[in-house]
Image 1 (cartoon, rainbow over the protein chains, first blue to last red):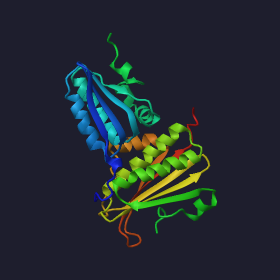
Image 2: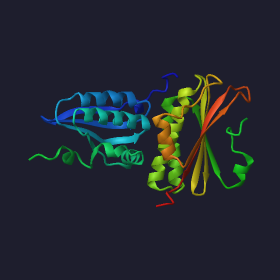
Image 3: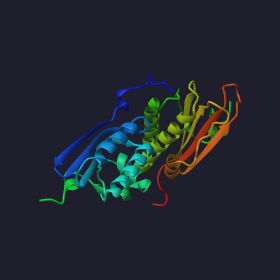
Length: 123
Length: 146
């Protein structure tokens, strides 16, 4: 395999932010496939090592989700569980919802359709 | 030529329209192939979930094959668009005759979930181009049980 075919499609944009002191949000944009799964996994590691009780993955900007991405998400859900935390997902598109549902992966997460409801439960 | 290389005469007779995409066997080109899959399914009036499933299944099959492909291999993906379903044959040349697609992975289980039927085909060196491995999958345009 050579890397001559690299393009910006391979680049996954993942940004970690802290809208509240107890909340960490990883916002991901792009396509999660075998090319970008390593970057996605690294970003999830960052989220999982963040302090706080509320860990959110905002996947509204994700246009494709392959099994390699699902595997990373399943592993992240289990690691969060070890901390006693259930990861929250923000998803709006079929491109993300369908893979999660058809594989049964959705059951591992709290699903939300907008970021505010994902951070919710506070005054 | 193996029977994976091109549609057989029987395929040509039963009303399937055929689209073949051939790239070098590089993961960087799979987004192009899955975009073709998605487009064909949309034009064939697949329901939205079935379009998503086919796109993901084709991605999975191609990624699996690219993993075992020889460095100089092509990745050939043939779509047979039939009434109510699309059949996909994806194939690469492998490094060794013993190269196999592992079917005990999470990715393979996902592929089986997404496609209505999926099979692996290993072929020894038939035409001097080296041994090949292929995945065939079949996807219906909608969930008839729904």
